Length: 284
Image 1: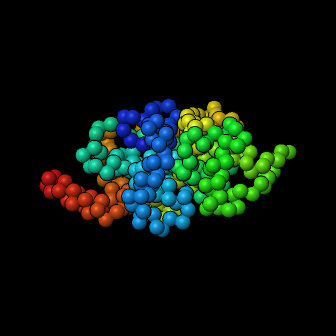
Image 2: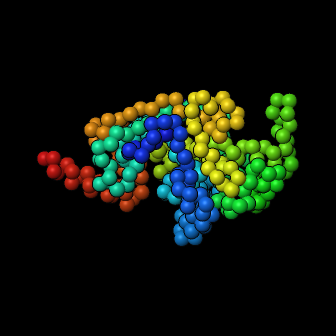
Image 3: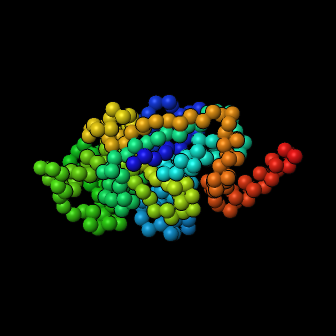
């Protein structure tokens, strides 16, 4: 399965590696619990429709909070929108002359999870646990996380085993291994933003003390079971010349992908319409 990672601007490295949003600043991942609690405390009404932590974290990610989820899309046109700068809400920063990029990601079938899977649920609950209480290298190092997940999913605490060839792993051992990897999953399209962007997510686990995984997403690690990005690799990059981005944005409108479809909130739609009319008047 191939998916498009959405990027724009000069900060994009031309290599294959990229961190999750929260791992880009040490202050963020070390204070992940505070980020989550403050976002929830100050705007709890916005999350009333979310039934699970996965849905809640996905919503926070789409509204710019640093999280362990990273946006991808299954729609090349949506990827083009972001590569041309439409992911930047401030219109003054869009046409910056920089080239845009679309990363093409390859994902193994067993690395694409459901939004209800145990590992995606566990990663979504990491913001509830302090850094010092996350240590997957120790046998009891994820007990606090298992406790938090069990509060919302009682069956998560069962000591069931999963058959993997000739080996049997306990659920506890399986979690300790899987939390140190990156996974892809298809979220519930419970917001207009996620639906309009044909959203798919990467979910980043962590190491002891919530240290970042630093996945490579390199094709050489694609079949390496010990690599954090095993089963997920960047296989190509489409580069968009900065001088043609404005033209491409206009052409995307004819494919049913206007600028206001990226962030279809009423305030943004009204702003896009009014600003577009001003630009058209200047061109006359």
